[in-house]
Amino acid sequence: MALKDIEAFLANEIFEAQFDSSGQFSLDEGRSLDKLAQYQSERPGLWLVKLVQAATALGASEFKVRQFLNTTSVCFRPNSPLEWEPWLKSNAASQPGTRHLQLALQAASTIPEIKMVMKVGKQSWQVERGAAGLPFLPEPLAAIEISRQWQFTPSLLTHLRRSRLQLEESLLLQELGRYAPLAVRLDNRLLNDPVINKPPGLRLGVYVPALWTRPKPAIPYTAVERLVVGPGLGLMDHSLRLPYVLQRNGFKAKPEGQNLFLQQWVGPDWLSTRDWKSHLRQSTPGYSRFDSRIERNDEVLEIWPDYNRALGAITLSGYLSLDINRNREGRLYLVKDGILLKPKTLPKELEQTLVIWSAPQINTDLTQLQAIEDEVYQDVYRTVCYHLKEAADQLLEELGYSFTAAMKMADALQRAKAATRYLAEQLSQSA
Image (cartoon, rainbow, N blue to C red; front, side, top):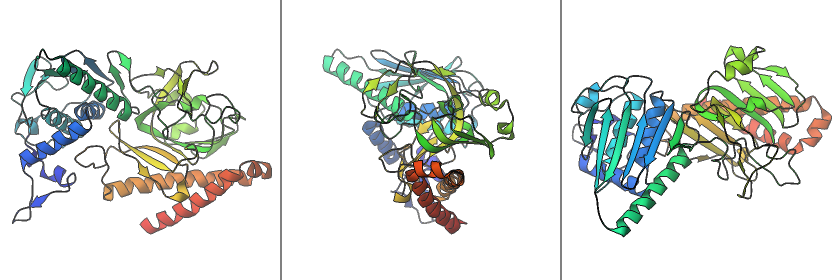
């Protein structure tokens, strides 16, 4: 696929665009590939990241990576047909999954001293620089296998450099793919365990305060959290926890738990039924259970006896909390087809807020890791603001019922008030 043929896509992704005399966007193909090579070099593994997005968008349940001395191979089986026809004509595909695959091969084709081979079913293609038009029409739902093979060299230093590159690639895959709804496996090891892979600032479900202040070892504490049911993210099953107050589409119950003050579930009508948990667990990511090792707030890995057990996993469209991101600036993390994009820092009124939100429709720049703040982005941000305000409003309402609770949750009360004022202003301006 020639980059010059995907003008509309690149127009949103690159800042050094040029326009010809007719006003049409144009971009030199060689220069575009050089830029992809630059980003591939700066963040080794960009091609693997794009392959994860392709597999996610195509409905695959598993993404397997195998690393050998001179070869890295990737395999996944799509659950929906790819849009092969445009690629046969060296054009960009409009289908997200096929587009991710095209860009993955383009990025990989810029790596020097390698041979890239894509095998679809029984047909194979040795990819050249630029990943131009396909030489055959692949089978609709055949397994896709892509291998990168290094040229043989007797140099020990070269082998060490390649081994280091493979390590960096696997770390990037683990860093950015932690919320992918399919199982990402490296040499049969699950990379995207929802609990293990949480660095500071992303302790979704595993925030651990100081030993003497936590209500229960390894159980996160937050005044309110909101879970939006739907596809997009693979997360731990928060329905296993017992909040003090539980809401499902506005329906309120009091399990009298101590782990959360208010937990909100919003989404389909079946959330209001008695068997809502069984409905929730019918949609799981590529893994149904995962390990429960946790990372403490001081970044020391510990295993707590009362929490060291396999936990359930579910898929969600979003997670929001006003205060689980303790002692940190508020952050919004968008996930595009299973890959974590660079976070957006939220204003002071939303300190300690943490939002993880699936946004497959978002546009990214040429790095593929930075969201472009265009109209599509603004629509997503308004939706996030709406859910944050709903969470804060319902928390304020709940605190208003009990003087004792309001006294105990004084910090949360002030934070919710500030968030509500700010969010109400933002939503009114964008109306």
